[in-house]
Length: 291
Length: 296
Image (tube, rainbow over all chains, first blue to last red; front, top):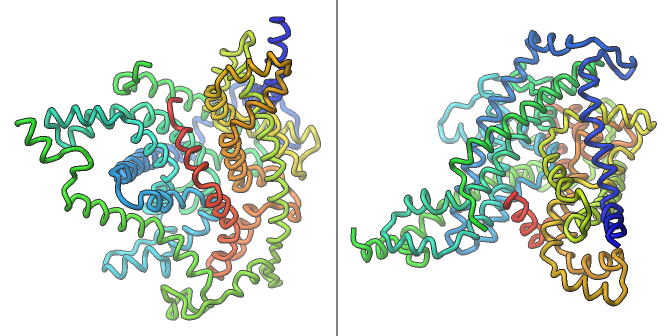
């Protein structure tokens, strides 16, 4: 009977068992093998040891994409997180028309990546784009958003802030789960709004912030479609050339799949280390309810 | 500070002073305007005549509404710029999306049922591994996955875009499992006493009760498949088999800096189905997102 139950259990999970072996385990292991080879669609893999990794260390373009990706990630993820939490807190004040505002803030996250890129190319257009038209009307300087490397890298950060609605909804749900009894107790102690935010709200939603921040970091490190559409080849002056774009270009444009696999493994290891580190460091700050 | 004065001054949310309520409203209205502006402007541009977009004749709002930009974007036939058959691309996208949604709903509910309601050796370990796989960045898997599909002879077909959906995804399994766990076990036991097989219980007892969660999975898969760009970019080789994302990207690369009205019309055509689905299932959708970030 027990054997039967076990078999039924495996049978239900079978598609996923096959799927995870075929589309996760196999590619993950195969790519570490490929990373030690010279390989392309046209050539079968030939073992070359650590050559790919050795070359990567000296590859200027690779180091540039690494730097760009790191800069984007550490600016976009915290900024989008702060804005998402701030919006969620505003909406959590039992304000009238909450659902309407929630829909408005969420709408941008529904826009498909490519349409998003096309839309923002037009908003950032240096002559007649909405942003520069507005800045001109306000009498402010009008940067050349898409062609000046110093400002171009901020366009993607701005877009990620605009698209924070998804995270906002998650934070709003977390805020609504904070027991009101905690606020009532703080009121009795005469706590100010700031103190309540600092010592009640933020600790209570800290597990959600951690989870979202980690997923946000992992997502930001893989940024591909948006810069691919808006800044082909990572223009201007490679200021928007990202890790995943260079990896894709190596694999499918330069026919260097072994080299691309080595890049992929570096990305995987970096993701792993950062995730484990943030879990470890955050254990001091994140408050988990005893359940 | 005396507790009483503290309570009076700040109080709980209900006792908020009038000026604070006003300040919150003003902030929300200003922020809403900022969030809506790009979308509204996109719509305005899509309805403008060509000469009101750039240069001296540029205007914020169109002086007359040019609906014909939409059919024009749909069937753009100018010889030097290339013809983008958006209607055919829409059909391709729809086929891929529907196949992906069906596969995702079946495979993820089966796996989630197994993790949530069945007992088998290794289950908890395998579920932990399943959760951990959400951390694996896709670019690591890209090259071997491509080689696998090439070996199968699937490059240039739709199969790499939808077949994987029939084998589950960690995220959807996690989401559905949370929901399945909350359905009382007694219902399954009662059905079992009546002689129902495990598959019957899954199909006739659990699934009907899990309808909202299934809708969430279907919606998420719809969004993912409809918006997917990397998949089509990797696997579609023939221009006739392109999806809307690919078509729009191609259209954009052909029109850099010109015909913004047509580009915006084309983009809106791509966005509209997503908005439509969202407004049809708004409540379920928002609840679904709200539960995804909680207690990972």
